[in-house]
Length: 212
Image 1 (cartoon, rainbow, N blue to C red):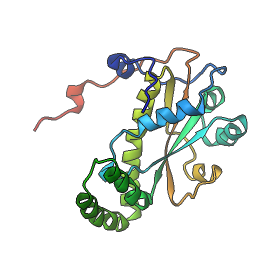
Image 2 (image 1 turned 135 degrees about the vertical axis):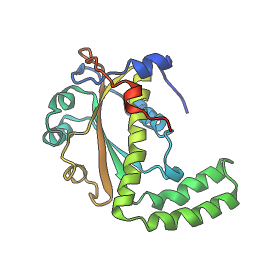
Image 3 (image 1 turned 135 degrees about the horizontal axis):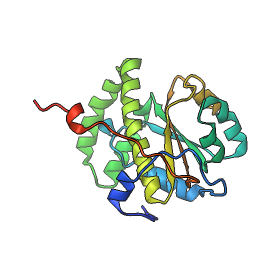
């Protein structure tokens, strides 16, 4: 994997990140670089490596017009960003389990017998999840990928804003996805900041932590 990073300063990437609402509208991101950032985001961990995250990159004016009424009070991000990346969790992610584990074997990262033994346990386990259980799993895992994407984007020189305010019951169908299978988790705007992000506060660690 090629990493075309403009910033490799961990402290700056992590602690300097701010949510940006207004972007430089002249900035565009090539499909090649967007796919590179998404690939780097998928290094995030997921339960038994089922990788339930799925991505829709909304970048054209026509598709942004469809998205705009669905992101509620986040129209500025939609209008000015280079793209809005929609993160969905695949409620049938285990259907790609064999492909994932076969790739691991082919690349010498997993012995065949381990692949066979693990899939024999994992697939039935996932198949027997309730809808609520699967929903929880894919949302946790996909949220990890979304956070990683925001940090990767910053390493590439871009800014982002995670958006949770959207019409969750309409988002999948608006972009031709099966709403029963693909659960919307987050929308992330990405581009180059046109204005500085707000500095915010955090509760002190001792207030929100217990040692037992």
